[in-house]
Image (cartoon, rainbow, N blue to C red; front, side):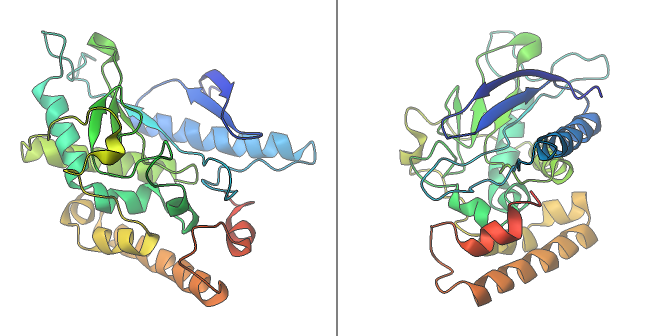
Length: 266
């Protein structure tokens, strides 16, 4: 099937696994991710069980993210993110800046359910602020230690339920905006990045993220206004149904509505 699985391990929570897919051109990587998720659900179903990529199926257990690693290369395949001195190139710096500058809007496309925002928060090993750091897993953007051809960014804000096509497109759109405008990244977060008060807190709900997306000209221009509008209409309907059926919509606990709405589909 050429999915490109190269590693896997049991994660912190019961029946939770991390699976790593090999890198590739953006569209092909999205294809392989979609195929992988579909295959896992189908194969597990043959044993009478359910596999889910829902970000937060249980209130008292850790969530499942979609951590996207990516690099930028030139036409010959040379990595453009590594500097000669072993640091990050100007291109990498602008990519980071663009993603952080568009982080609030990006969150809507990387966390496309009401449930997803119950995974995000301080002290959760999921992002809370729009920041970055060197090999820092408490930041939204992590720069792994590899350099040369292995220089890359890890976008840690994605939810397990994210659509790989939308997520990859949105991340690249935000990074491209940083390059076009030659934005400068802030200083990297040191230590526990949740305490990095200089960085803005990410949206705390799907509604807040959608408001940011609606106001974001970058996503509308690059992804297409029609696509952004349709996504927003569908997701706001989802929010209305959640709020009409859940006694306390502000609860951080995972509700039965979320289990019924999302668990099998995602």
